[in-house]
Image (cartoon, rainbow, N blue to C red):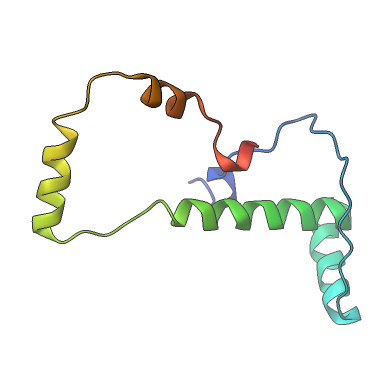
Length: 102
C-alpha cells in the first residue's frame, strides 16, 4: 500500500540547489530532526527539504479539493458534461506547470 509520501510528486532528480534558507530552532527540535534523518539515511538538509516540500505540496493540493452538497455536485457534473470548445486559454492552462514543479 502506498504511503502518503509516495503519493507526492517527486522533486526533479537532478534539481540544482541554488538557494539557501537559514532556520533557527531549539536544540531539542534539531536533535529530533537529526535522529529521524539518520534513520532514513538522509542528511539534515535533505530531510528538512523533503519534509517541507511534501508538506507544501499537500497544502497546495488541499486548496484544490472542495466539498459540494448533492445539488451543487449535480450542477458541477452537468457543467463537466458541457465542456467549452478548445481555445487558446485552455491550451495555455493545460501546458502550465503545477506550482510544485516551478
